[in-house]
Amino acid sequence: HADCANYMSQAIKYAGLSTNSTWKAESYAWVNVGGLIDYLISKSYINKCTFADLKTGSLIVCNSSTSPQIGRASCRERV
Image (tube, rainbow, N blue to C red; front, top):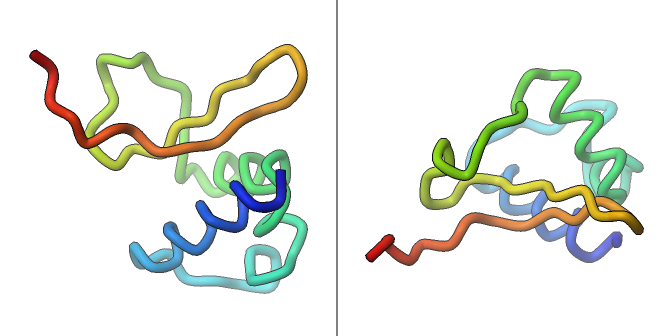
């Protein structure tokens, strides 16, 4: 899952979140989905919500039976 966590970390950094000694390129919190989720929760950057709470560009983390998945909310409007 390093590719998706790395991609999301780059996007979050580009959006303005500053890196630090825990969350920086190549760190566990940067490239590992579980590490990224734990870091973002520990800093109160993400929290649980419902689909109704999501906005365009929201970070989405879905826990499946095999492993957590991370992605981004669609920019398509509801019809």
